[in-house]
Image (cartoon, rainbow, N blue to C red):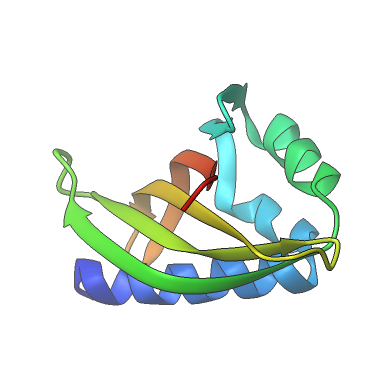
Length: 121
């Protein structure tokens, strides 16, 4: 699969799962994974999942996705923008960056995840 195909499949899976059953995201993170959520850094799958669960019910609407190969041939960088509804409130703009690292043919984990709400747009 090309980096673009990997990214498209990942983004669709990630946000569909987050919106319906966030627990399903646990297998995407590892002990080496890091999430920066609104400036707060969390390391490891357990800490990351605790944070994602704490957000509550959400609905993502992805507007754009950019993809680049990483410095590591087995990794890809993905940048996503869109809108998010948290708990049914009005939508807010967000951006999120992922670095996926391959663990084998067609298999990836999220090594880096940076999420930020965009206010005043």
